[in-house]
Length: 204
Image (cartoon, rainbow, N blue to C red; front, side, top):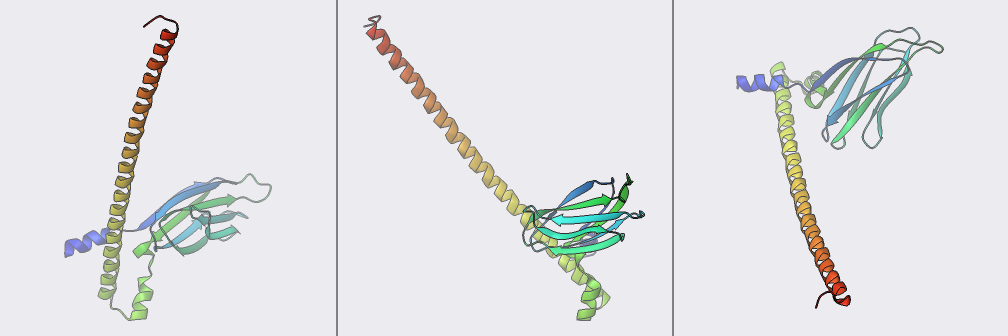
């Protein structure tokens, strides 16, 4: 049981990134999220006099999930729930003051999804849970998340296998069709030449 707790506690669904954004430029990153998973994000820009920033979160269909433009404060948060499995894009921009060449700014971005995105303190207060009960709830949710991940990977593996089998069958059919076409063309050439030589009385 202790080994299980240690193993589950080691699985953390958190991505913490630090990167620099040049002035008047945009940097984007992508995150793969499963269906019905809650995603939260916290971002922080390094200080810059009269600098502003923008952040934009979209899905692969171009739908906006979060957008904040030209803000002067340094910190912010966002949250959304994935309606289906998708790859989400998070873009950050650095806007220098007008007429100023600008400098790069450091951006800190912390993404949490699934279990780590839940606020267990609020759950404990709402349901009046003891600390041990809260930890057990968190581990239960984490185990459920891992089970869903394995089921998803197995489903993707099966889909890829079916795709490979379908592709192999199509390649086989195409090869057979190509061979038949070549044989037909060769036969036609033989018959054509035979008739031609006969018409010229070169053969009987």
